[in-house]
Length: 149
Image (cartoon, rainbow, N blue to C red):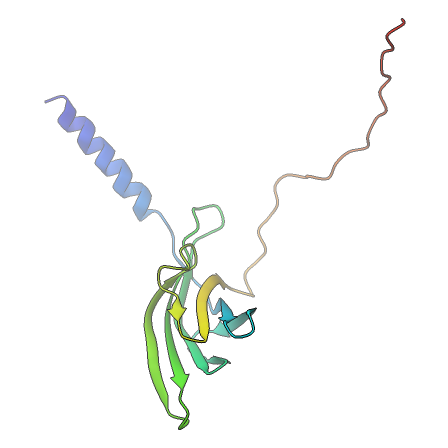
């Protein structure tokens, strides 16, 4: 019976910590794209609800979420990808969530191109404050003891 209160306390703590994770909505999604023919990786950004063409693919993020810098990273975006065919018609080849921390989980895998989410950003957000000065101080020369002394 003593284990039941402990289990309840642990459950409340676990639920409380996961519920406190704040989700930030960002206006820009950053992607990386691989052209398998040339072996070139290109990084590009796309504003939410706008499109950017990468090769024959059109990438459109619908929403892009991240967490504050002091929390564990979790960056997600709901993305739609269409391919432009030979007849100039577009057809959707991907619609779903991408996760920056697990790029292989839901990346677009195309015969010629791969596309994955790398980050969500807000260019207007204030830069994080650096609390600690990491500038090295002046070096002092120390005298090395000699063996014959």
